[in-house]
Length: 119
Ligand SMILES: [Zn+2]
Image (cartoon, rainbow, N blue to C red; front, side, top):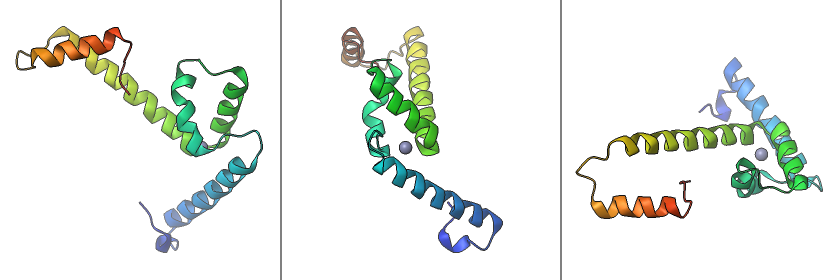
């Protein structure tokens, strides 16, 4: 990570401009009456990905995403993590090593029956 004292280099200047811009974006997002904040974004993410948000909340979420590159990055990383987790689970379905305790296999299968997909 580039620190403030590196502002003499071109990369440091770009980082500082980005930080100032992000502070302004967060300031706007925190004061606009119909906006969700970055800290609230995480509360919506599961419902957003499951298409379970009411349309008004969906619009707020989409608008926030358009304005906030940090939350876009967060959402991308979250989706990638979920996809990787599912891929690993699918792979595990093919061959469960004998070293995995029966109780653990039973617990994972029971969790799946109740709809838990991780996360
Ligand atoms: Zn945000």
